[in-house]
Length: 478
Image (cartoon, rainbow, N blue to C red; front, side):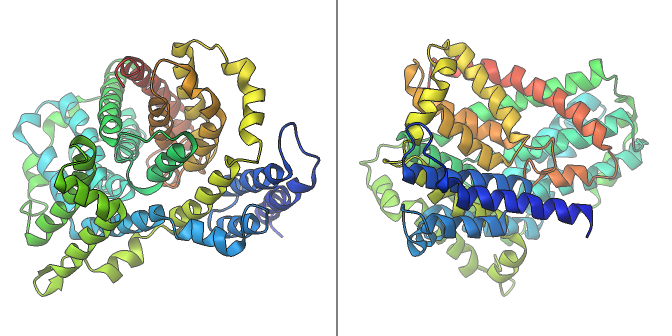
């Protein structure tokens, strides 16, 4: 048996022992027998998802939760797969795949990067390139945006004369990757970000204002891209001059930039989803339109938008082919982990477990009386570290659980803390298991692993330098 297989089985056994055996240990501090059961399940589930796999540990986690005193197996499955979050994530993944398959993201990217204002302005071109593909990840999935950004960059590198291993090539590949995955996290009402947002609300009673979250995140990531650009030029001395000889007209001629009816309808559908969030947050709830939308609920609205994309036809075919989009667009890892993490996290912080009391006793010496500025910095650094060690969603929930007893001790809204944790959790990339996107970076043939560590740590530093002052200012406003 190969050593990797042995390691896999050993790690799996450790996780299962924690999940099913932790309950038989003597209660720790204020933890009740129920608390010991759900704590073991939660720790075992997080461990297995981080170091082994996601699909089968999630299934086992639901069964383990159902075998505890918290609920039955049937109730655990219903709480997980019956959650409206799983429903909304499923719809978003299918719609995003439909947009990707239509070529809309590529058309928009090509249109932006071939503007005349960018010609013979290599630094501006580099900055806009990273930002544009990052923004495109809001319309399509980050994996599609990353692949597209890299594919077009390879063509640009060939035109300009950049080679594999050059600093400009390396930093552009890493910069585009990080821009895509972080900008994608600006829509916290989708995918695993929604899981974290809902989990935070369940734990604290404070919801996440998606508009405020978007604005703060957009400012931060735009500042990071600007600092990354300056670092490329003045710290790492990248050669920008080669871009002056690029043939933009050739890039323009590689594809039709016109939007057809299908593209416009898919763009409209995604816009309707964003509009729902904006309207229900910004406008007064007593308005008839807002009251109707609230009655439909976000989950119902997502479904109606998807139905619209399937009903409307273009060239005798539905604008969105559900079967085709679902066959390639559904990320079962995300859906399964969501279905398992949600009920497990709720069980962990439910009354009668003693978990909250235990965490408060342990962390009081550290966080109690901590200066607000230091508290914000500590959350940023701790989440940035955790999300690059383990799964971004899992570590986000862990940190939420740890700091919740202290979020009400400061002058700023607890929701700001939730925004920080959710957004920073997007930065999982330094280790292959940090996120679902991290393997993409490790599989790129143009860069070496040591460069991921080197430039990745630089990016983390720049992110902190950008995020900390923004969140500090926001603490007096939010």
